[in-house]
Amino acid sequence: MAEAGDATRILVLRRDNIGDLVCTTPLLSALRAQLPASVIVALVNRYNEPVLHGNPDLDAVHSYQKAKHRGPDESLAGVYWRRLKTMAELRRQRFHWLLLPGGMQAGAASSVRMIAPRRVLVRAAEDALAGAHEVEQGCHLLARMGLRYETPPQRVVPDPAIRERLAARLQARLGFSPARVIGVHVSARKASQRWPAERFVELLQRLPQVPGSVFLLLWAPGSERNPRHPGDDEKAARIEAALGAFPLVPVATQRLDELIGALALCDRVICADGGAMHLAAALGKPMVCLFGGSDAARWGPWRVAHELLQPASRNVADIMVEEVLRAYERLCAREPPGAMIP
Image 1 (cartoon, one colour):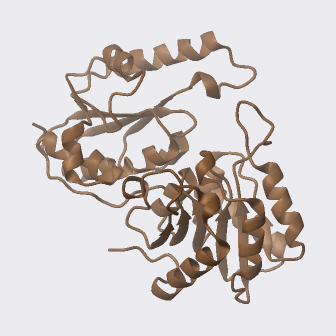
Image 2 (cartoon, rainbow, N blue to C red; image 1 turned 60 degrees about the vertical axis):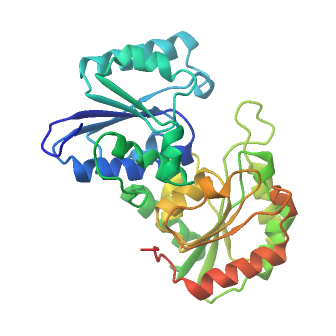
């Protein structure tokens, strides 16, 4: 059992996607609050590492490169060699606890063996008793450590320099500082979560335009023809071209920390389920979110004002523009920009 006075060394391993890691930040906050003298370290994949930049609940963040994310100048042997060095460094730290809030996924078992902590705690079926949401089930590991079960808000910290740089770029493009920024993120990893470009165009044309407000167009960078990492450059270009002189500013966020900085500038967000949705929720942004095949009870926005739309078909393409308009009106009527649900 972990106790508040212990200088306990805890490693939290999360190997999966952006949203999964964002949903783990409440567990980190609770560990820090209940074990203030502990050493809390995270091990994540390098692509997702910016989610934890500046997180005050962590003493250190270690990352490894996934083979599929390696650059053109990175060899497969080099990727695995660096990973082995990271595991050896973590082994030397002699962790009391290794937590796997995402469960024992493929490859995690070998990491556990190499790190060799004193105790391993893996999310299991019993953690589903805490609730349907990913945050609730991940935080149930606290109770299994002998700590108090709680589910704090998610936490993502934007880089101040990146946020200021994007704000300056936005002001230079517009010629004025906008009074309100509505972010529209048009990408989704899963096919069932993708809304067509023409629907986004119609939605933006019909949304109320408050004087001094602007829409920020965000998307996953890269060409749709890239076989390894397809993006939505072409989709974003079609939307921008169709809207002409509309107050829309495209922001190509080439890195994850840039996406976090851009979302931090927004007062409200419209997006599909995915990493950007979870980042926006962790930044406290009220949103309209479009859900396709995902389990909304498990992956919906955590503790932030939102309107969630999910058709019976579980395909976002079946959501009509009129439905999103009504959802946005409801959101505006009940929550001021930036308000968090207590």
